[in-house]
Image (cartoon, rainbow, N blue to C red; front, top):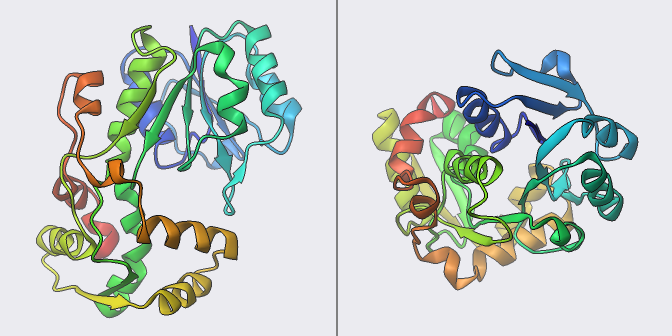
Length: 270
């Protein structure tokens, strides 16, 4: 009952690998460079890249469960060859699939519909706050556009926890699951939680949309990604702003708070 986890060293993937291994499930972790992957003992690291379809097809050999990213790389490109990947998964005998979206349903979800894939649809990731780390350490400040608008961010470990349930049981098959955290927060609220966790006195500086664009350009984001992120921040889907209980219903425990996340990642901001 081997489970293949793509994006195994990413924000969600590494939590999922750890959870599955801890639960006694055989795990194959797909990563571009297995030698550099820091995986828990018991996980099998294999080399693969979405740009190389044959490498992913090889990794599917003997797999019965699949956690699949729908985008990859620094530009969040849609995973290519989705129809071929779905056919390869079906031929390999995959029985359970989880798909991690990037804010919208697309060709990957359509291709895997026949496998009753579980579509994980997180709103704002708590881990997005890590993009503030360098400014916090260097200047003690967070600069964002549309920072007054609230979201209900979800802990990446909670996304992984739901994925683990979907990959090891049948109760969530075929569902689309919007995932949020337990509270609505704006950027100032999140900065306050980081201050509490670190003992720092970080300031929030509100940016105009134009200045927010310049900030993201300086961080190396392409224009399409900037348009998408700023558009999401300015006018997020309404459901992403309201807490839901999807994590608790799937896993049996409440979703973690941003304060908990901030304590876990305090060293990143020091």
